[in-house]
Image (tube, rainbow, N blue to C red; front, side, top):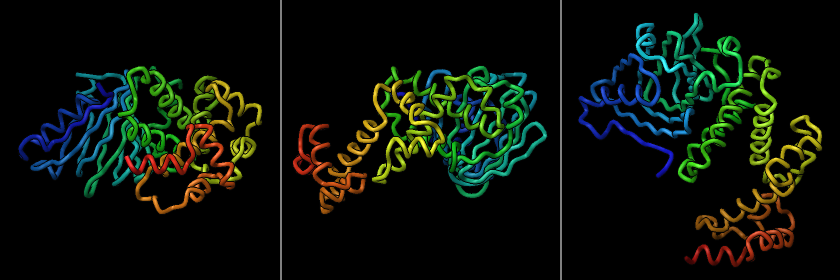
Length: 322
């Protein structure tokens, strides 16, 4: 059984779709009052990744207004934070006397225990929502309140690392097993804490474990985005993150590998993927190696054979003739 559940309002007649969405949203997140100019035929989609007490959802829906009132809070309050990462569309969010205008590529945090208003306008909006118990976030509650309803960039810097982590998590959710849940939840929470801590300049209040976890994810994201650069080395990675080479090696020691070995493994995996892609069949083998940082064809061939027990050329032939 997978870790994800998918829902669509298309499974019921048009007149019932908005009511269905209201209930789906309440069950997957918290109960709010919803209204929409598209209520007569509300086409929306929801995918939920259940990581225990952490839930990561992706949603696509037309224009909608959201209100969480004091009455709803008294009736049902799971005492959670919701972090909304807008990937398309625009909107606004208001809580605690602050109001934020949101655009794609930004995130905003709200607290289920406080009244909240939101609106997402124009066409369809898409977002990823991370919901977690307030007690799970390793930051003091009064500190977190200072960032509620304040937009934070999720398309660059550490926020961009968090946004890409969520996108990759959603894309690869079907590859994960129940045994992966604790690690996935831990990385998600620690990286979120680091983003909020960086925004509020309170990183010193994070636990050492949370800081290490966030730095590890940030370093791996940097490596993944620079695999094609032949000059990518442990030294350049350490310099880019303003840490010592020794500190960088300590981060990877906990993964049971070295920095250089992890870079090589990621490059080879990207090469293997491209070699098996029918759309790239006309691209020379050496060019695929060069695309991922292997400048010398002979070095690429030796490294590929050492990793997979077959030459790149033979692997491509076998993969494309299956």
